[in-house]
Image (cartoon, rainbow, N blue to C red; front, side):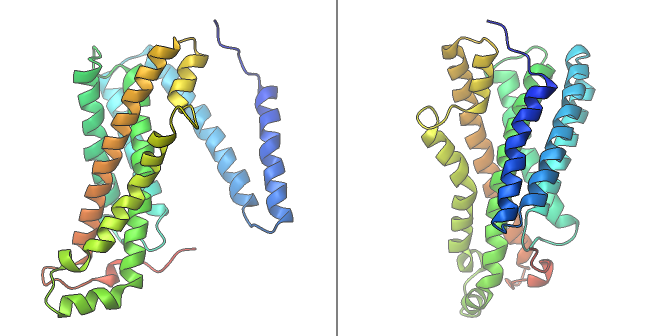
Length: 267
């Protein structure tokens, strides 16, 4: 079965539903109409651009170009992680924490999958490497953004309690243990919920795309199971690493909480 091609008119008709949502936001004074329109236009532009880039990469498989594309994706994800914080870690450190943990977790998981589990030859085959890394980075980005945002906000809101525990002789690890655990749970909850609902409540995106493309359902299911396991592992390790690195940055060697490392609250 061939894939039914979509025309510009089809996309335009779908966009009318988003316009209706923006109008509803205006009527209900939600204040989301600008973001709905701007981010949807941004999304369309980004996807059209990546479509052209992928078409070039697929026809010119090159390890250096694939790695360069991967770095662009990583740096963009790092920027999004930092931009989503209400009280972000200021300076280069805030950007490097998110970017570094995503690089370690997502790139490691993608590398193991391409070379050992799937066994793609060559390992940098764009049809496998780019979509796999994109799904890993996207989900890890969400988990890290949620967990670090929760962590820094709670450190600030509960600073008096933390400082009292430190004055009583607790180490920074002991004084912040509950907050760090709760923040890790917050970051991992989206992927845990996705795994719980997959197949019963929702059909995941990759599986749906493969089925629409003509892949046998059972084969699509196997790939989706693999992807969900990889995303869960990458997100989990990324969240744990980001929480640890952020906490370590916010406490000095004398176990003092350094709130001057956090920016003012963003709306």
